[in-house]
Image 1: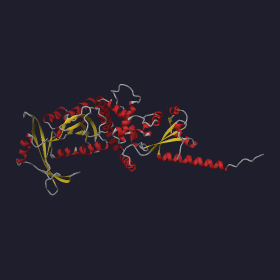
Image 2: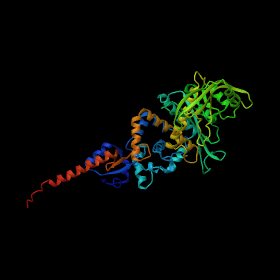
Image 3: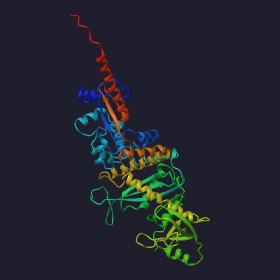
Image 4: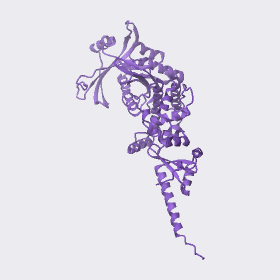
Length: 500
């Protein structure tokens, strides 16, 4: 299939005359005029981009303002935001490796670059934008701008009722750096260097949403970071009491004063685990109670993803005092103790053959008739720790830092977390179409999420159009057949009689 090299004809100003019109391109094919074709590795199926745009999520995500921009570098910042979104959707998490995306003519046209710039840069064997430009763009987005955009995204999800349920989970994730110490405000804990990311999730099954995040040096307290998230939510979205009833925390958030503050100042209940077996509460209350003989044990069976079917022995009791360091009473809580067994009745062991520790759950919730609900709440956080974190690290590459500037790292994470929410909403609203799209992408062998093979076609009369591979092939075949038919018709035309 051959077309005439449009870019080599006429003056350089011809690129400025180009306008998008698929109909004009088809007409040019029918007339047998020349064309130039550029393949795209991502654009046959626009399902994801169309959803983002039609749902209203696209306009929020791409409006994050680079408020530290001192001078315009010639590329509108909204286009650079769109480029960042497309890069993340394509699964290219390292900016220095995204030439594959930037050289894709179809994508660059879709996000707003004009044909003139694209063709001029291609003629010089350069990408339409340098990767360094994108990294610098992210570094110009301040924390305030990230917060404004992200919490507008959260408000919009609430408005559309894409957030349901009132149980939330806070989780801290460490992003460690093995080599290099030139990252801005890099933190240190012992021999580890890096940063900490705290994320607040809604924990409704099938509707898990990220509603808050904080990014800081590694040594920063996750308890403080969670309170900062609460402050942001209350300033920009709604009161914490309006948003949630229960928050589930792991042992990293342990503290008597902290539990009391969350319960009394914010009006929410806490479910967590005792930090360790050496707490006064454990030695002087839990163990004494267990040895008293007054324990009412219950049993149940569970199906766990890693452990399989197990039996659980559990009991609960109320009115346990949490003490401050000076042994003053801070607050009272309720406690559930659980031991895990095989179905044959043996205590579960870890991979090293040691007994798995008993679980001591601490909560401000009333235990009710059956304290097992407290364990069930805590087990629910595992879907966030396992599936949620696996998705964020493997699919979205949150451990990969972009550049060395703190603003750039934070801005990139903000884009990623909003896109992660968006893809979960897409999965909820269009599960059949989305899973079909994912299966199709696997067949193409492309790790990106935007699509398969697409075509950009330029014509000699100053138009360009975007087509699927099938559409382009059909147009070429029809144009070729028309040309052959016309050629045969000319051959069959009778020759004139020589009058001489």
